[in-house]
Length: 149
Image (cartoon, rainbow, N blue to C red; front, side, top):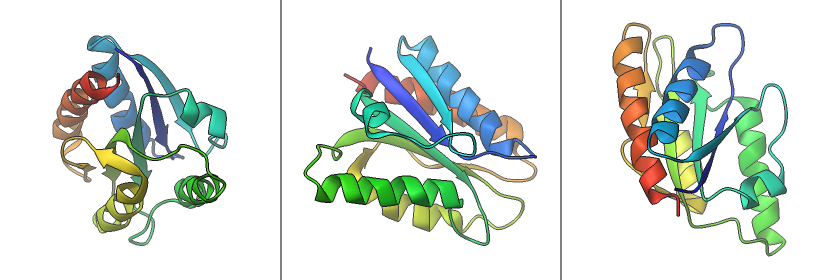
């Protein structure tokens, strides 16, 4: 299996981190090499992206939109693409957390569809379904690992 980079934003509650870790665990179980980047701690570089065969991207729902650092990642993708870097076409898995909203899904999928080929369904982690979301992310990680060539 190939290398997967799990890109996510997580802060004080850790809900997005929890499902990011489940997705990473599923990918590792399927034999992939996994690197996790919490965009709240550091920015994703072009080298990070170029060294990955597939990506997973997750965000909390902030006012119905992706976290600012995830938006910055997509802005960077746009600039790299405009500069002629080969940043499009990788398989990608998507996930998000929310405390009762959940409308971030539309923004996340729209941004990702410009650059990546989505694998599986976008996983939602709401306020009362943490266990189910973790199971879905484990399975999604395994599925993404099979696409990372």
